[in-house]
Image (cartoon, rainbow, N blue to C red; front, top):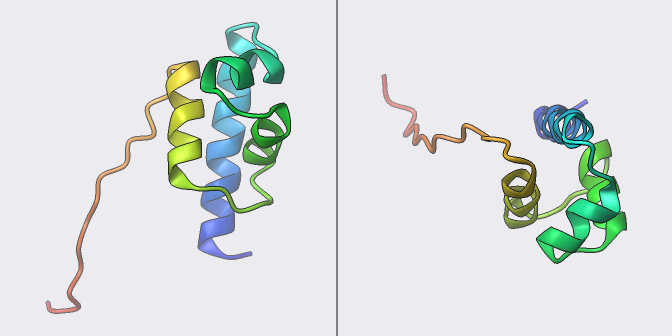
Length: 77
């Protein structure tokens, strides 16, 4: 499993857990985020590539902080 797949699945799980804590359905989140319910499902499973923008929209709806801090590593030590 690649690092990206693992991260996608972790984010998807966090979104699903938070959505359920809020008592929201995938359809509820989709309507607020302006997305299709199937997109919410794909993000939650983490098994299909979606854009960061899409993930960020969903995370915002459920109040999940992705904690993304851009870093640049030029390979020099």
